[in-house]
Length: 118
Image (tube, rainbow, N blue to C red):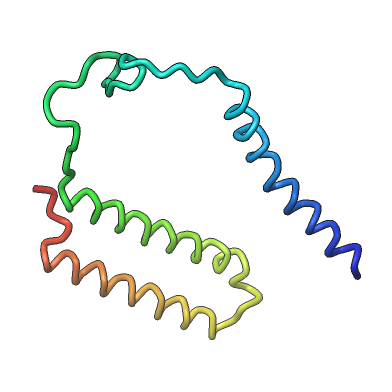
């Protein structure tokens, strides 16, 4: 029993050590010679023109959020579809309720105009 936890501990230690070790070593071994040219902001190799801070429209975030929601929906639907034969009628009812809630949310967002691009 303890050996199972030992493997988990070794794996966790390796998962923490492997990414951090190169970062720590590079911080000590690299040359550190900052110059004004190295510290300047650039855009595709050219000097930046105008303000560096750019604000994005909120609609982009709404589309990203809608994508994440429906992407997670497929994550829930796929295992259900694979195991549908073993789950029975109750699982079908649960999935219909799940899809109904998502559909109601989509219709609400559509009616509110949250899915309008411009």
